[in-house]
Length: 522
Image (cartoon, rainbow, N blue to C red; front, side, top):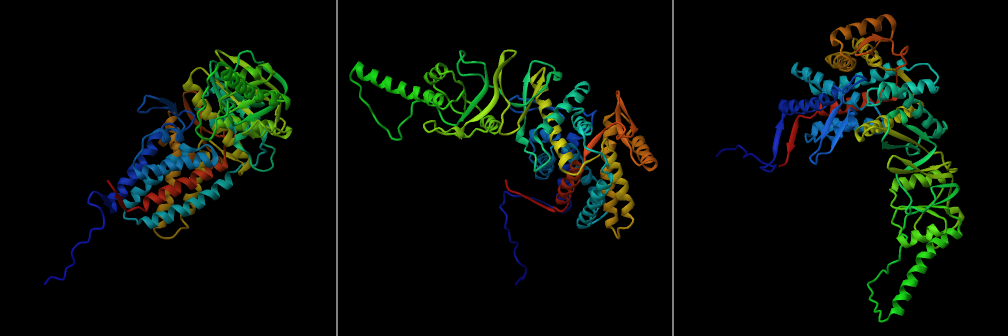
């Protein structure tokens, strides 16, 4: 009798399983493919991507997070690279392409090491050691400069350059971003991103973008006859419908005469008029409502001299409440003066064929709006992404450890630092540390390629210039680029962006490298 055990199947017959080198190869290839999709967008000379979804919606951008979010990615390892970009975006607001490309390069280097029979655990240990060294290198690169408006504007401009702003307008837009952050950030506590809003409107060039000290919403009064400007306004923010109240249970009423019908109408009208009279008696000048306002209520509000807006987005109502100090009210039957907010001025301004409402001078909290202009929807959408990123990096520079040289200079410094330290790492792990340095160096090489330079010559010159002068980056000039001093060129990046990119990319790459078995249920 045979003593051999019969095979035991614990997976469904419909499951697909990939193991060993095949699983590693598949995962690494998927991660590299995603990273390569955004590689050409890196830097001020990076190109844009046109993304078209199944319904025909078009997005044109070179923002790494947006590209990866819009792509229909199914491979689980590729999804990890998407998560790298999302983590970078949520953490520091910029550097998504840098983190994604770095993750792809780490995987490419790991592929070579695996081909040389280096164990995945050794690669992971080497990458983690190199990431620690990279953080030390970043600390050494932090510039001893005062974070004044000029430096912060340079940080914002470095973030926006190449993102659809146009080189001429980038400086002016960067100044607006710094002014916006300064207006709401007092240096104490953490910055609240809700206090800097970005609203887009087509119909003018990007140079017409302006900073409004208050909240701007894309709304107009519910009736044309309402005032378009209210000074020294008492503001109420409502989250309830202003209409005839409905009973909780089902009820049927039988009307048998004209007098009864008129009584019902009069009762309804009295209820609707009561809303306006209650707001008028409380001294309210302007009402912002997230729900609908019935036509008859709107007429009574107009008669009482109250300007009303309905159908506001929840985030807009919240912003107005924050800016004016108003509470969001779910009932108007019991009102108190403490429930209302104040604005120095509420005005409805015409932009082309549209009306925008400005709520300025709120005295409870400082809130500002960057009103972004552009010639087309695609332009203003990309400008919105660029300015949102610029706000993020400006705050990151203030809150999280200063600035470092941009233009790939910090990456060159990291690569040199890690290579120098690799000699002190024992065993095969040293190979992984050196591979990490090569992966980081691929970032300035990509910047050079995108700027029209020869990547090999550029890296050789970057190394030589760094050894000689201690700083070297790829400076975009005209249609190409040159190796120079990014500090002198006022190209700065927040140190926090570099730290987060190293951390996120390393974590994703090491996780993918450790996977040797993929089980997929069909």
